[in-house]
Length: 115
Length: 312
Image (cartoon, rainbow over all chains, first blue to last red; front, side, top):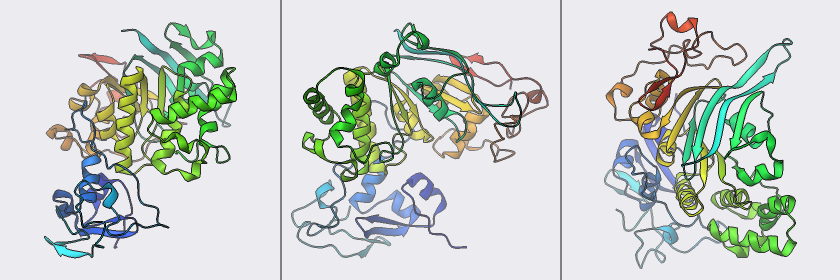
């Protein structure tokens, strides 16, 4: 049987899926083999999600990494990349150019300055 | 350090229709303490009594036996007003637990308006202060809950819980409805508030990595009873109870080889709490169980500071 497993729990997704599709504001922003995407995320949002999960190795007194801000209002979509306002890796052209999905390192990513 | 909350032999039984002396023992002989500035993580499967514990401590559910002390005052010796000044709760679903017809400031200020004689203006002012404290813009005070995002709603719930300046906050799955990026924001906020206000938390969750991150002590529950209770470092790094080991194994978070290779449960289903198994209630599922385990309920034994209910 084929399964589409929709979840925000990455530790479960990591364990039971073959491929992963990360969505943000209604768009697919990174998709590829689960192991590859989890091990070396190319989109800053994917990396942000992975870094926000406390692991057993996380130091207790350290602040958790968190993606600041919230998703954009879908009625008033911003120009350019939808993740621009919250991205830690944003650059000058990111809110001008609308990124297209492109194949990089064996997976598809929607970002003009991939990690 | 003084204990902010002491729970002794707490029992909450629910009567069932199947006979006069039939009960579901949702909480059975639970004892623990919480100190100022400390977080107790409560873990266990659905149906193990985590939420009954929260409700009983809040007085929303009547306890059948045992004692609860806030500082040195017994639960029965203080008014509900005084109790709510001691202990408050944050619920799992931020939207379900906020009245959709009330504005943000009213939701936050309600406990204050009900439990003290402040004027409306003062309550509004205080509500705005709390919005700032939890990282919400006070200009949003006149907005309704549906106009906030999930993470912001949980901040509203936290602000409401803090307005009476409680010493203890019960957080019942406070981040399970939130996506991971927002979850991290709320966990950081909770840690920050604890430091600023000297709060004690009872953090109920099924997410072991979150509990490990936030808790100083861990209470593992199984069918209303304590399985293992001790410092977080010990309980999660060197667990003693087979149930704790099973939970850690299924969460795929431990690097400990003993846990990774721990044998599978004999039975995946939680037994009915109406007819709990004899002896150790975990024996029907425990891969290590012997005949001895079916005979008598194991007492809690001390393993270098951790209490464990297992004879093996």
